[in-house]
Image (cartoon, rainbow, N blue to C red):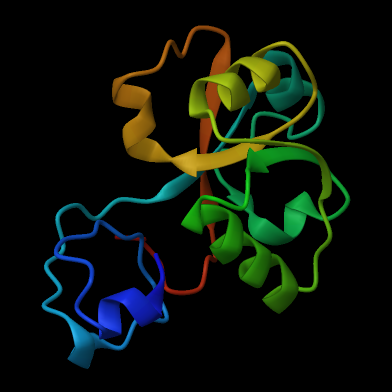
Length: 142
């Protein structure tokens, strides 16, 4: 979302992922949903790379092959900041605007992805493993 348009009152309503850089004084902010981002991968990747770990640290993704949302998604920007803060560099192999495509590519490859957990309410999770990420600054995302 363009902060200038918000400041100029050109946007009546927006749904954003927090944390955000938007000044709270510019708008009324109501949290609609609070959940977490999780790591998704194939069962084979889970067993071979992560040895069936119950949770994975963001630092464990350093140099891992990764697929993620493209620049049109706030998650892209927030993950980029998180990776920089944690001094890690996943090998990003693909960007997409489609969460179901990201899940499907991880289902049939060794790639991993980070997505909002509520996506699993709509996704076919067969052959995929969901792992909570531990030690994420700011905890849950809204």
